[in-house]
Length: 253
Image (cartoon, rainbow, N blue to C red; front, side):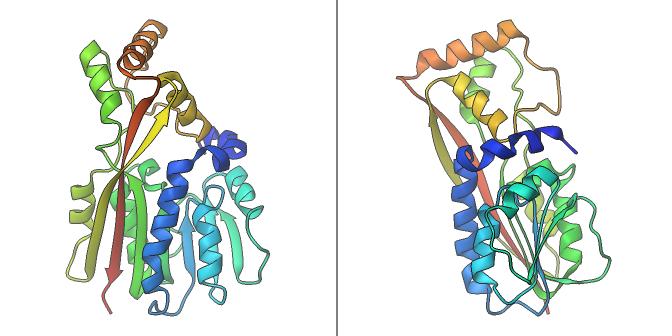
């Protein structure tokens, strides 16, 4: 388990504004589907502190809900935002390890978790396999066109861009497409403003996304250069763009 997830649990709900907006939009896209899903439980992969989970409780008060997260601290933080109901189960689960082999779930839903999977398309594809015919895989995640401002300043300075790899939308769609699936997706840009680049990097840490997974980290001199260069171009605030992908995969009957 990556410890930064658990460490971020006390701060996530307050600081994860893009994640909250994305969850709200993902839930809104679900409403037309809620009455036509097959029988069976709904499972959430990577609940965080409960942005999606709270909406699922309102939409599916008579269906079994399995709410999961890799971090037990996050799962417990989520529990604090949910009503205690008989149809609710909150579990610690690594979404990369699918616990069943047969089609079991009416829907799998995941918001801002797929980017942490070793192979996002493969993992989501496995969850699609255990989705019942007529069921739905619904996911939202930051795509690989995120943070162009950060990439531009790193390139200008000739230093590595140290953001973590993010899923490629086209690759995801191709790998999840088959004669048994209908794939729909929508891409959008959500822009955040920060009072300086240092606050942006602090923000990533507060939401558990500050750890670099690949490549060499910047040394202190390079990080100072990046922050000063980025701030110098801004007029009081810097802009950071998230490329957010909404993906719906319906499994044929």
